[in-house]
Every structure is written in C-alpha cells, then in structure tokens.
Image (cartoon, rainbow, N blue to C red):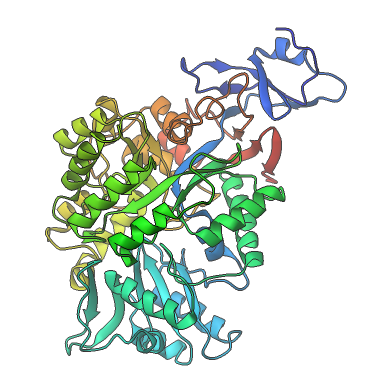
Length: 564
C-alpha cells in the first residue's frame, strides 16, 4: 500500500462499513484532496500519515458512507425553517392552538395586507383531530392574507386570501388539475383547498403579484433569503449525516440560487437538481414551446457538488389527477423523446389506476427512445404493489424511490384523523375502512421490490416531514422494521441492515449516475462519511432509531461535529 504523498486525514481504530460491492468492513481509511485514497487495517493506514495529516482515533466507533436522500425540496425546507422572515414554521406543532399562536405572533411583525405563509403542517395526527379552517385563521390574522401549506399541494387559506383568489360559494371544483373545494354544511368554502383547488388559488395570487407560476409553493423570496435558507437547511442535513440530496421540482429562480451558492463555496450538500416545469398550468403547445426554447444548463451538466439530473412529473397526488390521462401520456412521450430523465410521482392513493397508465405510457415511449438504462424513477412508491407492475417496471429498469419516514408519520394521520380526512377528501375516498386506507396510501412493499431485482432508494420528502437530529436514522429504522406511528402496515416487507444502508447511499448515487464517484467508502471516491455513536450493524433495531451522528465529512472536510 504505497502512495506518493501524505494523506490530509486518517481515521483509524474503527469499524468502517464501506458499502462496497462485497460490503467490506475495515478499520481505517485515508483521505487526500477530498477523496479516499486507501482503506485497510489501522497499522497499515497509520503508517501513511505525515506530519501534517490530521489523525482521528475512532476508539471503536462505526463509520458509514455519507447518507443520501432520494427526494427532498431542499430550498423549500430551508425557507420553512428560517427563524426570521420567510415562513412561519409549524412543521412540528401538533395542535391547532399552537399553529394559530405561531401565526398570530407573525402578524405583529408583518405589515397589514402582506402575505403570511407557513411551512408544511405536521404530517401526523393533530391533537384536535381536525384541520384548521379559515374561521380559525381569521381570528388571529384578519388583516393579512394567510395560507397554511398543509401538505403536498393542499393548502388552507383565510378569508382575506380566499377573497383575493375569488373563491366563494359559486366556485366550481376544478377538473384539470383535479381538485376539491372543502365546504361547510351551508356550502361555504372552509378555506381548505385540495390539489387542483389550491392550484386555482395560487394561479390568481401569482397573477395579482405579477409573478410567474412555478411547480411548488406560492411565495417568492429574494436571493439573499434563498441563500440563507440553503445554508440553514444544509446544517440540519449535516447534523443528520446527510451529504447528498435529490431536489425535486426546482424552479428557474431556485436554479440560479443554487448556482450562486455553489460558485461561492456555500453549498456543501451534493445536490442533484430535478427541474420542475409547471406543466399543469400549461397547454400542450406551451409545454412544447418551453421544451424547445430551453437553452439553459443541460441535464447532467455540473460538478460533483451540483448537477442537473432530470425533470419532475407529478401525475397523481393523494388520488387527485394533476393532468388528464391524455396529457399525462403526452408529457411522458415528450420528455422521453428529448432524453430527459423523469422522476415520476404516481401515487395511486384512491385514483383510478395511475400506475397502469404511467407504466403503459413508458412502455409505449420506450419504442421511440429506450427507457431501460436511463434511470427513470418512481417517487415515493406508494401504491406500487401489483406483481405485474413490479415486473414491468423491472423490465424498464425503473428505480423505486421509497420514503419510509413519510409513511412513518403520515400513516398516523390517516388512522387517527380518518373521519375528518374523509370529510375534506384529502385523498379520494375509494376505501372507507381506516386501516385498509392507511395501508393502501402508505404501505411500502420493500421486500417485494428488492426480491424482484429493482434498485430501491431511500429518502424523506423533506419538508413534508422534517429531519430531527435527535433521530436522524428514523427513516432507515422504519425501512428496517416496517414500523410506523400506526403500526406495521405491511408485515414481511422489511429490509436487511445491508439493504438499508445501500438504499440510503450507493443506490441513491446510482440514481444520480454517480455510483462510480460516491456512495461508498472506496479508493478514488469522494470522501463523504459519517461517524456514528454505535455499531449500525450490531445494535438493536430500536438503537438504529436513536443513532446519533458524531461527525459528518464532505469531501474529507469536517462539516459537522456533535458538541455533546
């Protein structure tokens, strides 16, 4: 083991789980110029150290590759969490009373008539067993347009904001994108706007503000605020051992912010950008014009910190169709024709069989431009359990992006708030039994997917659920055990420790076309790794849930150290 230079960093006397092809475990690792240059036993690796080498005695601690998340909204999550400006963070508040109090506090520092928006709402069950309404919001913020980013594309708005949107008693439910205006017993809208109904409001709000439409959240923020959001959120990721993410549905202004963050050296999370064309607001002709006129950064352009990786396509959200079946097939055909990698949110959850439509559309598109080998992904994975769908997806080499931690929390809401969810129709009510519906909407048949030979990745859908540095491996724990806040949804669908680690490391790297440069601790790869407080291979399942991150390295740079 001879090298011609002294490493910058050596970690030794540890249990280093490399996640290479043989799942090798070694004692030590050496890093030079941001990459791993040697792995092996402690005595051999220590002899490589020079006078300027930083030497870390792990004292038996466990090291794993830096964790990755297959599905986040990075900048959106950062905006949610900023303590000043941006949004009111209600992501962990578990009662309407707490939510209203937080919004009321924001009114004191916000001029009348200006928007107050919130983070995503807590995805578990609320204490009151119901959702806030515009009547609730009016009590604490009558003089501001207010909306709660409830989850996905669903929102809850106060009277001020509803009036701005022109949504009242006579407003019809939108057909495409599909949506539902929740109404009280007298037929008056309650402020809760589901799927396409939320789009209906946002489109008017954007027009009145003179702003372009985008795929996700309504509010726009200046570049300084966006950069602060990136910095704040990446510190949370680092504290949870996360070194790489796929950011879903990125808008053009967000793309420019990421480029600036990378050029300035601020960005220290390896970020694969999946662009978001707001196609549900556009005609087919407008979609074609946008695709033909797009001369910006191309797919896969970038470096090892920031790269464009494809385009996002949401077909169904909680059972509500974002497009007609005809338009969905059109979009798949056009994106595929131009060679775009697609990250497709199918989520059958109460819809007619959207999974069949998408898989059939990809099979048809495959005849024009082969799909296999392109690393197209199905996001979330909920509703993808039919054996024929799994088999046909494997033939197309589709990657399945699972979000176990989202299932962990959201299943509790489905069970414990079933009655109110049925009333507001958050998901289409084709199944009225609470348990069956919870399993349908949030079950993940991980074992079936893996046994079929599919590449399965792990992630969160942050900020639909938030990262908690006190339990950074909660998603991994849920994949390992099948446990959720509603119990085990699909018995027998758990994964092994090795499969769990691969889901959140090398498999995500594979989905980003980067398995040759990151995702495992091997010579020549980027030196991204995490030091844990216990042995992830030998500790109990409950200890996996409570694992603590002691250190996080990105390219050999220590970006987080647990002060405790």
